[in-house]
Structure formats: C-alpha cells, structure tokens
Amino acid sequence: MGWGHISLSENIKNLNSTQSKIKFQISRQKKTILKNSVDSFVQQANAIVQKSEASFERRIKKNRVDTAYNISHRIYHENKDTLSSAEIKQRVKSVVASMVFGNDYMFIFDTSGMNILSPLLPHLEGVNALNMQDAEGNYTTRNAIKVVEERNAGFF
Image (cartoon, rainbow, N blue to C red; front, side, top):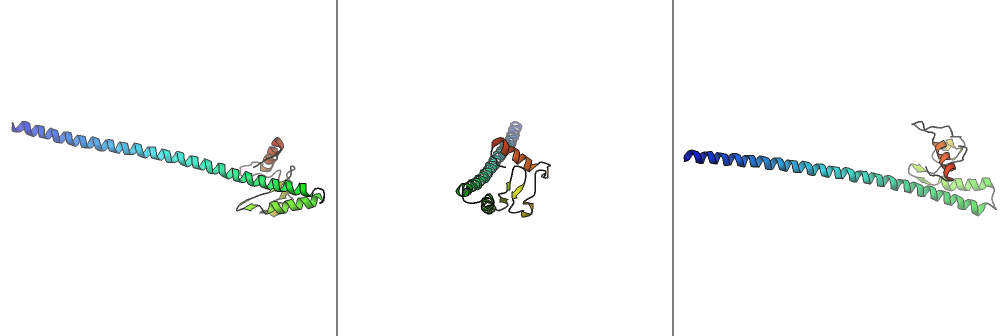
C-alpha cells in the first residue's frame, strides 16, 4: 500500500504543478490579450484625437479667413462712395496685415497670381507667384486661384 500512496501522491503533485503551469499560461495569455486590446483602443483613440484636432484647426483657420473677408467686405461697402480704390485697398491691407496668429497669417493674392499682401514676407508683395512651387512641386497659387474660380470663393 505504500507504493500506491506514493505514486498517487506523486500524481497529485504533478497534477497540481501542471495545473499551476496552465493557470500561469492562461493568466499570461489573458494579460497579453488585455494589453493588446488596450493598445488597440489607445491607437484608435489617438487617431480620433488627431483627426479631431486637425478638423478643429482647419475650422479655426477657415473662421479667421471668413473674418478677414467679412471685415474687408465691410470696409469696401462703407467706403466705396467716398474713398478711392487705392485708399480702400490700403485700409483692407492694413487690417488684414494685423491678423497674425503665431506662424499663421493672412495673405492676399489677386487672380492673376500677384501677391498683394504678405505681412511676414513683405519682400514678396508685388511679386507674381503664379509659377512658384512648394517643396513637393505643387503650384500653390495656381491651385488656390483654381479653387476660387471654381467655387467663387476659397479657403486653403
């Protein structure tokens, strides 16, 4: 009877050891699954935040452009009967030039590509930018003019 008891006792020890190992592996697998789920959630949340921030930034910039347009429009309508075209343009330029927001600022081009106002780069005023390209080779002024002509308004 002694041998049977020892053998059974050994089997129980082995079973308990195996059970502990399986529990540990299951626990580790659950932790891995949970970590992967959390990581996936964090990535999705970060993507949503980035998209929201970009959308918010775009709306802010569009609102600034709309404000500049509305102020310019008002200056024109309030002064069209009393001031010369050159005086009205100068007033509009003065107001729009003051609309600097950190590295963002308002600029004015006419539809021929002439740079009318560039507050942070005044040496470009009076320069035709129709053939200027950005670092990727895009004709940004041409593209902006195309948007304005197609939509009768534009925001870039």
